[in-house]
Amino acid sequence: MKRGLKGIESFLIVLSMVVPGIAMAAMRDAEPLMSRWWGSDSHAVPATILLTWLLVVLGCTVFAGKLLASTAEERRKWEVGVHSVIRLILFQIVLTPGMAMISDALFSAMV
Image 1 (cartoon, rainbow, N blue to C red):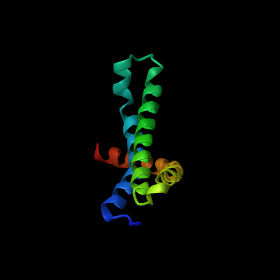
Image 2 (spheres, rainbow, N blue to C red):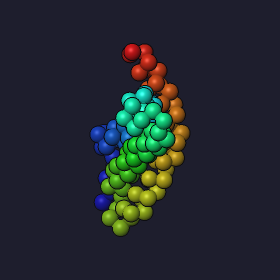
Image 3 (tube, rainbow, N blue to C red):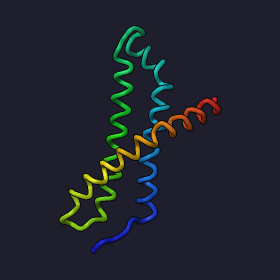
Image 4 (cartoon, one colour):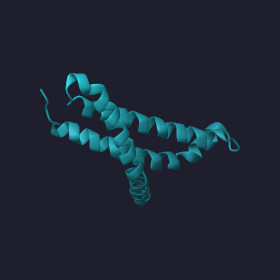
């Protein structure tokens, strides 16, 4: 029996596509704080920012992929999940720069 996505599931999928762009802008703003924590001349700051952002992207993508796979038939869940994750990664590649710019503009307007 196949069931469609409910409103809350659709909202969570859209939210998981938007979060990486917001996280990218937030991590960029957190760089001075991380520089003080790691030391001013450390090369670990960009790596830490990139790793944190990639973990956010991976978590959001897997979460959304599992939501989409939950609507599939039992024997096709794995296949639908993998295809969904690949499509969602492509969507995030397209959406993240725009969301980062919007988030950056909102953060700078609030300060």
